[in-house]
Length: 388
Ligand code: PLP
Image (cartoon, rainbow, N blue to C red):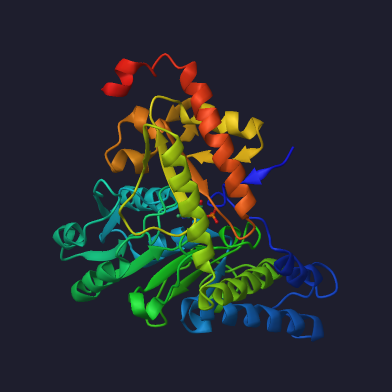
């Protein structure tokens, strides 16, 4: 069966060039990057080269990059490392759980927390952030691109608000990196998270940019790795892979080749809307990353559609998280005002570098067919249901 993968916001395949770059660091170049002999120097040079590539993607200094185990660790390091009990933290209702739960944990330890809402497009209103400020606001953390809808937040304005109030601004750019240009100086953020496996590097590697003037408390204590900001022997193959993926992403963005992605995404979206009635794009009208489309197919269960499409070879996902047997509606889609049944009827399509025009053509054949079949057997999809 032909398999089509449109779930790149969950994870991306490692690109062949990235795999080739990291491969020697499992065997020939195996040294500990902290060793002073030849083997250590070899891997140290590779780590520092990768740091330069990641810094070039984000337009910061190499010394401002901390390598981590992924987006979750980067977010946790930013939240726990930049705020302390007694501080006030502002975040948004649509953050990834890596930020939301890290903030909730801080709250349990004595931080004050404000979670600002979003509008029906999934956008945070900077005025809500401004109104939430308190004299002890230390950290504002608002994501750059949402993982479910792809909606891009006005992060530059958030950074300005933080700067005016003397707070630090962190943004989770895990789903924005490699999809839109990121310039930390232009944004004015103090900290920014990225993850390797969302940009065609492997799972288990990530980075946190932290401005050189901002002290950050480490999560992990031990050796003096990463300028004492993250202890632990470096994951050299992962770091080399992240550097290579960053280089490739920068070249794609510099050459404007990211437009090919939005052309394919738009074709998929328009094609589905043209063929399927009662389908609505979540986050439509807001600026979005070029690879993501979240579509609500009223009167069906998203999980059932994911399974039906998987049986035909098309991998997509719902925004819903499964916890202890109960399918909770996505907190992101509920935050933009969807009813639980509407949130559960939503599917995320996310393209990657390997996605082809043929993949989109095939998806455009499979999705209307599967939605039609599920609605035909759905007691909820009646003429009456359509008109309500
Ligand atoms: N932040 C966002 C917006 C994400 O989409 C993800 C992963 O889905 C993460 C953080 C966590 O990244 P990781 O899987 O590398 O821990």
